Image 1 (cartoon, rainbow over the protein chains, first blue to last red):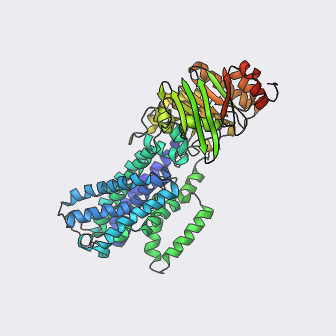
Image 2: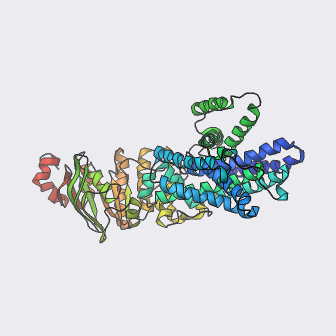
Length: 317
Length: 246
């Protein structure tokens, strides 16, 4: 990316950040809540995109790591009575460990077979959570999870989420720009070639799954902070499909694309659902139009228009 | 440097490579020739670990390498350019080579440190020696076929190989591109001291560049010798060169 384009993007990011910081001063509480939900969902989608868009890994059941992170926090606070801050730190780690376990089995397979095995293993965790009433609350989930005083108001939770998401996005950006990120993109483009230049493809894919699961776990923890509840649908494959759509919609070869995709999907779900029960049908229509007219997503289209085709774009790195 | 002895590989009932033998001395340029379907690419796949042999041994610098995964074989010093351009289409030319250099330097798992500042000098040096400096910022996917083939070689050089295997390096190239590529291959052998093993259909190239030629037919080795020995071999003339015209 040349300096001019880079400075333009930095300017845009700074402007968005300023806007996000001052919004609670004048926006209604409901919109601040929706914005916080968008930030959490955006982090979830961007964590998936590290594996999917940058690594070419068919991570079909990413929601399971989000749910595991959230349930880990909920269970540690409600069942083990651990302090909130220990639970908040441990949640993403439990998600990363789950990623390591599931990934260890799945990386032996490729593409669709990888995705199918991941859906199977993820669904196994979902059914345990769904059925184990004594421990996880079963299909009722866990509600009224105690939170520290400073996370009791919508605005304070929003600022907390904004700060954590900002840190996570910076970390994800650094990872994408690191030697690991570069190698991951090379694996996405051509795994056979990567092996032939000395890259242990499976090791890198497993690392990507673990890192993506960690950040999905962070998103799960933030969701608990926002909702003070967890429920089994957080681990259900339908949510995984929705996150997948967010990546495709925003642009899975771009860094910021999934953020945009998450914003569109959450906004649609929130506002369109007020008028019709057929929100998913509208999402389906949008997806069909996207496949035909914007195969690289909204952000991919914007980048293509704003940069010469022959140069490295965000999609490249 | 490389010794292949009695290596075989079957796919179901079809025996693609049949007790093949090949010797590649250090510092030499060795060619493998044979008609289409003779087993040349399969032999290369066996050497570089893309396929596992059914029997026989492949020894590289005194170590048995058959059965090792491709990345382990690459780390031991065998680089490879593929028959069909095999580049990282969505990365720039610079990034294509840098990925190989990062892997060779065992830095490909580094997180949080910008790749921009790592292995830059080594990558530029390879781009310069392969004439790709002017294309460094272009996406590999938009390069011409000839440039993609050269990039293939540049990527292989990124892993700093002792032995470089080139699978039909001039396939699909114009006569000018072919001449440039073969000059480059010769230069690499001389200036970087890289041993070259390649297969090629253009007999003019083979007999002008190679110091040793191995001829394959139906997966077997007919002969390995100097260009003159190969020219004069009756079995080769009958089987491949068409009655001694080579």
